[in-house]
Image 1: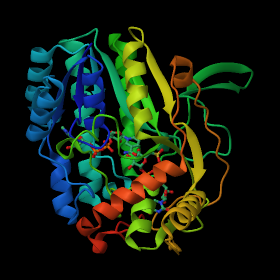
Image 2: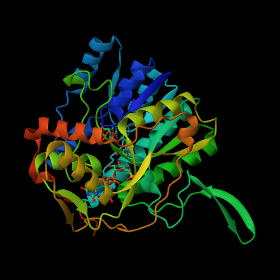
Image 3: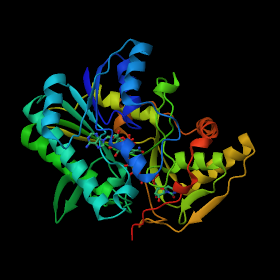
Length: 383
Ligand code: NAD
Ligand code: USQ
């Protein structure tokens, strides 16, 4: 298939682009490279060294013999988006290209406004480009499990059957997002649902959990193909952060009680899910929603798991620190989210293993010198 990867320079997008290219799809990347600027703004960098996007695709060409054209530009600029769609004529667009950090969106008014404008406008432009240029193209949009929040009932996949005053309907599942970032994803979901209904386009909203891991078959081939991994208090996410903290002698930063439970998946399963969704597309006019994760864990449970593996395999005694929670969220709650639709399409999960934690700790030890300890503490406060 001809697949456009928007956000193909990022943590999920780069390994997805390589994986799909390796599997024989015709792949092109769109990215504004703004993620690299946010690193500079925050005084941080990926734990692993990452080559420029131009060098990455040049090395991939040498390594695999496959061409991955790149389009550098901002999805907020419609003239740019139009040009990409006219030239590449995608059959599927995988849309990763958004500001994805909840803490970044909560820094102040400017960051909240930027996040919502960037994400909502970019997504709307993609919807219009599909409608006007490639109406049969399947939009595979990265949403997030955090759109649902933590309700005291099971979380369904996108929709819930409700009985009310003797009548019944299947309606979008209620949303109680965690941040202005997570809210931007809710706004995107509503816009996509409306576009599917009004224009008959096909879309799959992948409500993805927190992604952990780093290495995929293609990105480990050589240093120039390495993926990024974040450890800072703004872009770093729970499990990856804990492994890097254990490796560098930093206490594991559990916020509050740590009873917050979230959905998680290995980055290799992100790649699998995207390809499964692409090969079995939504129907014209259909707005499909899949919950894209494989397991759920509490944050405390993950910290204890990393602590145990660090001790058993490296002799590291990692301390668990319970920091004042910078976020407004429940620290003890019911959590059970349904996730059968991707399994039905053929997903073979990589469940969390001690080996994966060992590999992350090992990677962090190798690149310890690149860590700026000043950016590990959480800096954005929800209140
Ligand atoms: P990332 O920040 O590493 O990558 C996003 C990429 O999009 C960056 O390279 C950035 O430069 C680009 N980008 C952002 N705005 C753009 C714009 N307006 N125009 C063009 N390019 C733009 O993020 P990631 O971790 O790879 O996440 C990818 C997607 O998956 C995001 O939409 C995110 O919300 C979603 N997601 C991520 C996780 C996770 O744990 N990383 C979990 C659930 C969902
Ligand atoms: N947390 C800690 N300590 C840390 C980091 C996080 O206790 O050092 C806690 C947070 O308070 C939160 C949970 O861990 O309760 C998850 O936080 P996170 O930073 O790992 O992930 P989150 O902010 O939810 O965002 C990440 C991605 C985002 C994606 C989301 C999926 O950055 O793009 O949408 O995971 S989900 O959580 O399902 O919404």
